[in-house]
Length: 543
Image (cartoon, rainbow, N blue to C red; front, side, top):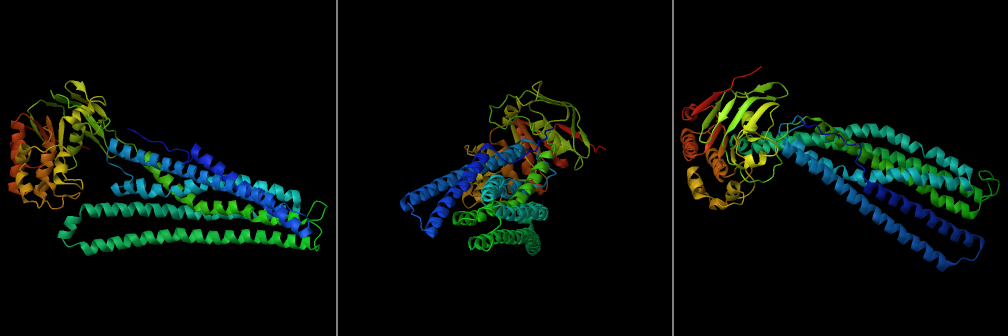
């Protein structure tokens, strides 16, 4: 079993570098504001000003600020993309190398986690980390400069500033819950879409289109309501925070105006407020609140990221049964025999125990038993797609391990119960780019199927085999399994839900494969298939 651990944060060294550059870009404005205040105060008192020198300094600082801001955004963008791609690679790699059964959700939920939900982390990585660092530095620098010139202006900033993070925290609790509900709804909607698409042909045949459309309408409406709840919280909190910052700036502006007019004589450290200090304070006051406002705006991004982080933690917390091997291409091993000894597989609700088996080249086995008894699990164990909890699978008298599993699977053909195809041509779905063998097509009774299609073997198929009947799809699946002449064929319910003629064709093709020296292991409820197998193994329901 493998259990993944939750990382502490989404942060990275590149993201922290971007945040530092963002802070430096903000601090440059304080130097620019000093130049503006110097020029305006000099003009007010009639002093001479080196206009060209000040202008060059101002625009030089502006260029430097723009360059730092650009570098900060590039670093943050690279960090965000790298982090998202790393998480996406982890999800895809884990899901493709471990048992496919998951309690986290269906294929739609996994796809939503790897796509929309991870993309929701991007605004958090781009905005929240630099906003938090700016809050830790810029307001304190401005507060220190303000206190140097006027203790009363500093008191105003101290009184108004903390109200923003306090209110932000209060709103953040509601935003986090709303974001979590929205993320759950996104996963549920994706699961619903995946299920309905998989059954689209059947739903069309039974005329269930209106009901499916109504179901989608209800699900999308529920998602819309939850999305609007998140937006309402965001707009409400932004309005209140703008009010606090506007009041703080207005109070400083009123005090500076009355102080410069001489109506107020208190608030400084003994000396009257100078025009330079008053203008400088007015220019800095909005930037005291700006990092707090940025953090408040990014707080909703953090709520969404926290919801995604919880989903990732839930996904990682699952114990997964590992697939043997690395999933890499390898030369097929020469098959000499396969043995099962005391094999048991633990499932969440029970333990499956399988009989000891000795499978030699040229054998044919039928695995029978009621649904849910573990027939498909046994095939997965034999293929190395699922590692047994206890016991041993011996390939050529050596344990089946990560070392030889890829070579073993290269010698195995797999015919699953439910036909699944790629959105490519029929030719590609059988050979995956390799040339097709006419003998194999004839053996699997696919030659007449190809002849009946409009574009022959170049006909494009959908995921469920659009354009093929159920029996034709099953024949194509058999041709795929046999295309590379496997030493062993594992077939899961190859004749299930087929008419008598098609089932007879499939059985004849399987027996022809065995007669040619192949080894067949199939699960089935079909007595016609069991009668023609050399060995029949019955599995019983276990408590």
